[in-house]
Image (cartoon, rainbow, N blue to C red; front, side, top):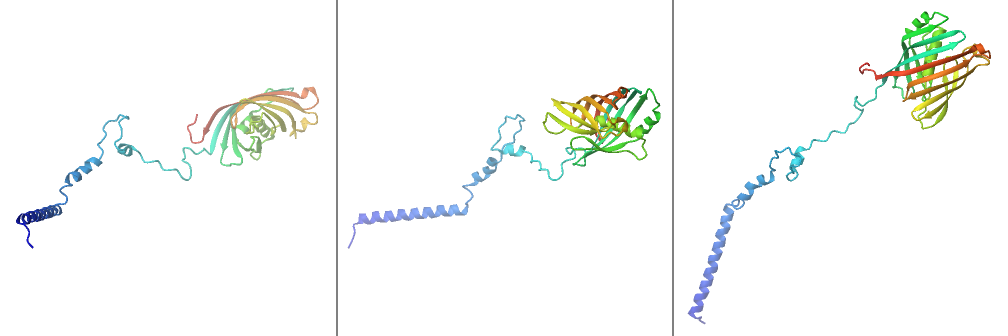
Length: 300
C-alpha cells in the first residue's frame, strides 16, 4: 500500500518539529542543572536586608517599632523574683529608742514634791510574744519642800530598770537592780506606771484594764474618742503601802494620744490614803514623746 507524496512530507515535518522541541527542552533542563542558584540570586542577596530592621535613631517615644523589633531591643530583662529573707532596707528594726519628757507635781499635807526629766526607753521587738524594754532617766530633778532628795536623784539617775509590756500594753515584770532603795523603787513605779497605756488593738469604744503603779493595782476604764483615749482611774487594790488601808479612795483622769505606744499623756489624780481629810493628795503629770528612732540611725 502506498501513500501520497504530500502526506508523507507533512508527516515527516511534524516528526521533525516534535524532535526539535524535545531537544530544546533537554537543553533547557541541562542549563538549569548546571547553574541552579542563578535564578534565585536576587532573592537570596536581598533576604538579609529585608529581615534586618532599620535602626531607630529618634528618641521620640512616638516613633513606631519596626515589626516589633525596636520594642524587643529596648526591653530590659525582668528583675528576679526575691526569695528567702527580705532585704535589710525593708526589714523592721529589732530595737528602737524612745525619749519622753515628763513632769510630776504632787501636793499633800506633807508639802510639794516635784520631779521632771527625760525618760529613755529601749524597745526590743525580737520577742514576738511580748515587748521588753529598758528604762533610764536623764536630767532628773527632784524637789521636795520638806526633804533633801539629792541622794535619791543620784541613785535613780545612775541606774536603769527592765520591764515587759503585755499584749495590751500594760507594764509587768519590773526588774530593779538588787540593793535599790525603797524610795528609788517607788519613784520608778510612779514614772513608768503613769506612762503605760493599756490600749487594745480592736475598734472597741471602751474597755477595762488593770495597771500597776507605786500605790497598788489600778483599775482603769478606757474610752476611745477618735484618735484620743481617755483613761479614768476607778480605784486601787493590792496597796503596796499599809498607810493606804483601810479607807483609801482614788480617782483620776488622763487624756492620751498614742500609736502602738503613748505619744502624749496629760493626767490628774486625787488620792485619799485614809479616812482623815489631811491624808488627801493631788497629782498632776505629763508625758510628751520627743523622739523615736531605730538604733543605728542618726540621733536626733
